[in-house]
Image (cartoon, rainbow, N blue to C red; front, side):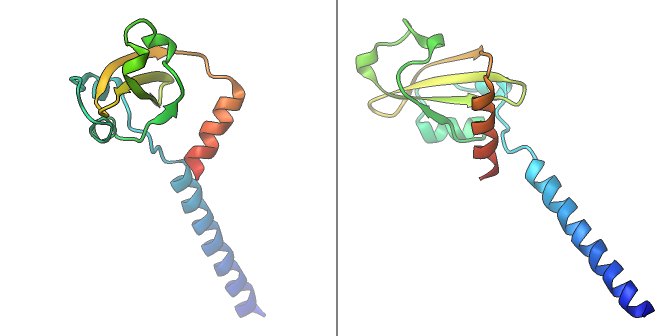
Length: 125
């Protein structure tokens, strides 16, 4: 009887430890994009180089971000990507048809709750 209780208690401790480890691992930050890394950009980098410098893949955005309107010619652009810093700031970078960064900006924009949920789900996957 006592062996059975100790066995169940041992299994419970193991399951709790594994659960705690998975919880901590799932909550670990995976976005190391910072404004200091943004300052390292010099312009003309490829999308891969920008992602390497910022430390995370960007989110493709259709059109030009508001922060870059008027700074770039829409006809010369291929696409724009956006990064979010852990403190809530956003970084937008536009790439030309050759794939090089032509304009960048950092800005703050309030995030509504559906966007937060999408970001949380994307982070977990």
